[in-house]
Amino acid sequence: MKCKKCNSENPENAVFCRVCGNKLESHSHSKSSYYGICNVLFWMGLLVSSYCLISVLFPISWYEKFFDGSQHLYYSDPFGIIRDGKKWYMQEMMSTLIVSSFVTVILFYLRKKSTK
Ligand SMILES: [Zn+2]
Picture 1 (tube, helix red, strand yellow):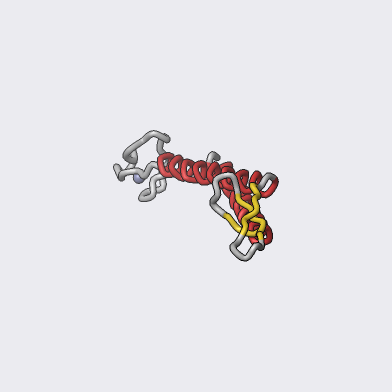
Picture 2 (cartoon, protein in one colour; picture 1 turned 60 degrees about the horizontal axis):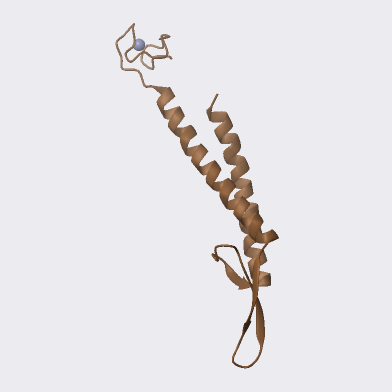
């Protein structure tokens, strides 16, 4: 660990610089919390994208009858977060799937990078 004040090398677990006595900032702490945030977001992204994938592949569908005798086919995900006609349901689920997968891949690399 390098001292910011005098630029001398110190042991990793040092609290104060052995040359000038300046308080050293522990990078290991901020790095691990950064990794923790990336880790949580990564798993959340993975959960959202896998949930969207299941919803796109195995949607729940049903017919709803209206007073005038017409019926409409509705689609919903397992927890019923998005409930709509087929077209909009698929569009919303697919776009959420694409965005969440993209974010998850980025978070995967950020998480991998933060461990080094
Ligand atoms: Zn120093």
